[in-house]
Length: 173
Image (tube, rainbow, N blue to C red; front, side, top):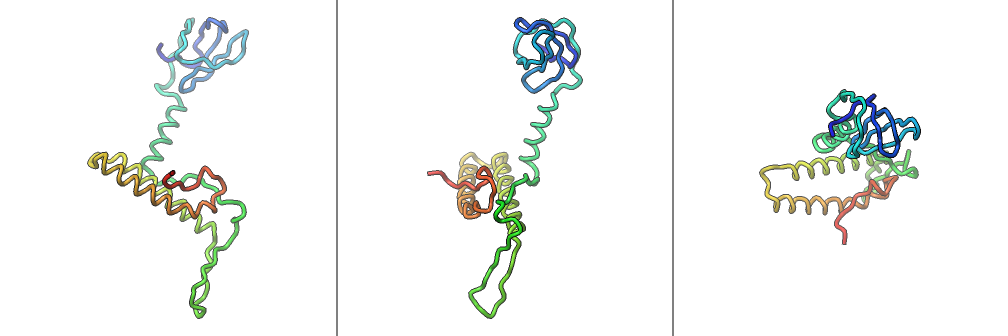
């Protein structure tokens, strides 16, 4: 079935007469006279009473999904990752073994930001390796394994993250 635009009037086998009020990637949001607003799959057969052409060839959510995918793959845009609450406004102190030298204090949030940037750049490198057209599949796998080991080396810093979903993960045994 060709796409319907907002305002299209339809008749549904179960819900009766309705009007398309919103369009999503895989479903129409249709306001039915007797049943109220229902989500109806775009694959479901509908009896079209009055067809309105869609304003766009793709839905907003499809465009948004595509943009997110492109930004993740090709940019150095950093996603928002939260520092654990217990570390906020904290300071990391580097104390040299030589007592004649001064300690160095580094704000934990600044250090954390560097760790997150490192991870994001590793992800971009990983994506560029996977998309590279001159590398063989074997080369890509070897480089992927190396990157996974790098992530494993960074798991020490997981203590700084607020959410476990942001943790570094190395090889799983």
